[in-house]
Image 1 (spheres, helix red, strand yellow):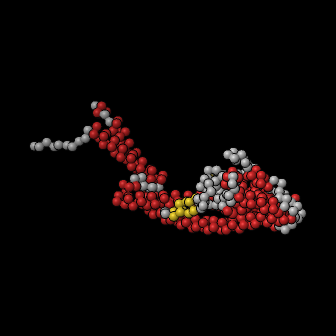
Image 2 (cartoon, one colour):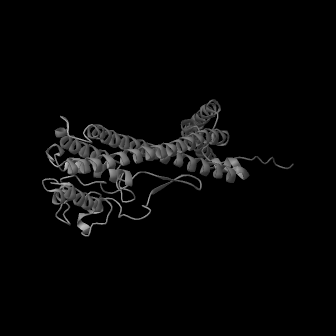
Image 3 (tube, one colour):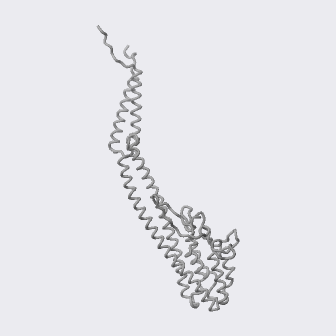
Length: 356
């Protein structure tokens, strides 16, 4: 008679099998718990198989699009601040222009206030054009690490001169006659058009602190989409700002109500009003151009936000888990793990001594 052979496991083998089962269940529970908390598959690329490359490309595209949304929102904030600063500068110039026009041909009772009003407008404009966002000075051009304009009475340490010093050195106590007025106006023109024989007395040295003047002036450029750039910004040395600052400087440098010679008075006032008028008109045109760029950016941002919703929806189809299914699976694994621990605990208490 052939003896019956019984398959049996030793207590050690059973313990090892139980231990491996607990380890697998614990690992599954950890992955499922992660999926419940994040709403995403824990091992996406293992689950996707051959589709993982497509999902990875989709995630890269969504990430790039999200980056553009963030950067374009920041750019939009910059453009809004530039627009606000320009509008403030134009408003200050227009107020003085209105007062100057009332005194263009002859001095009226308000002429004595022009000097004070012009100086206050200069301070307003310099404050408006020295605004910054996150350390980026918005009217300084590419060299945005410093304010665009030096204060009217602030000295340039390299030259020892402030803008006020340069202008006062030309104007003195004001023109005594038409010939002297013409000469002074020509010298002031040379300050603002960069032709003054002394470089220390030019606009780029006395007033402007941004980019070194060049033709055309360099502009900031932002990448607003794949292969799409936007050249943007205004600079405090743009022709319209130079004209406004020159006009205000003319009126702030002398009390026109004290100019006795009529030819000198008319020449001085005509130069101031002309510079302010040209500057205000030029600035209005620049604001219109800036508005068009803001509109273009808004359209692009709207497109990117719509694309963001589409890309995230498609990604969700691949990477998201059903929260109910994941929670049910986690509960089942917890039950299974508790049962495994219970069996292991009971096995650890077994001993042959209990039956002797």
